[in-house]
Amino acid sequence: MKCAFLISAIFALAMSAADAHDYKVGSLEIGHPWTRATPKGATVAGGYLKITNKGQTADRLTAATAAFAPRVEIHEMAMKDGMMRMRPLSAGLEIKPGETVEFKPGSYHIMFMNLKEPLEKGQRIKGTLTFEKAGPVDVEYVVGAVGAPASDRHAH
Ligand SMILES: [Cu+2]
Image (tube, rainbow, N blue to C red; front, side, top):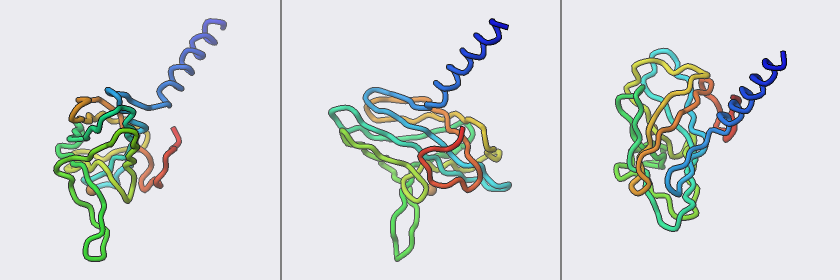
């Protein structure tokens, strides 16, 4: 009995560590990567996260890749001809020293394209972000509900 308690306590600790769900590479902190479950037949999904540059020099997110999406682009939303459209940032996105850039619905996002399988709520899916100076970092995107709102905090 005592042993079972101990195991569950350790498990709870491990779970709360996983819940924090942040990553570090060089002087960059990556907070809370997430995406949304995709409706049947959908082949694209947006990836969202926060990047904070705690260093003294600017860095640049130059690429994102993911095994579950053959094609991944870094997108921004911008007004064009009176309409919000997304477009790829071919040179990536700079994060200045001290700056936090938030990738969120309606703004910057990672675009997962040509999805082979639908994303299902509750999954954790692996991807890699590559920065010009800090290099690559493996992250996991937590899959939220279809149409999950733009939120910094989602239920785990
Ligand atoms: Cu997009």
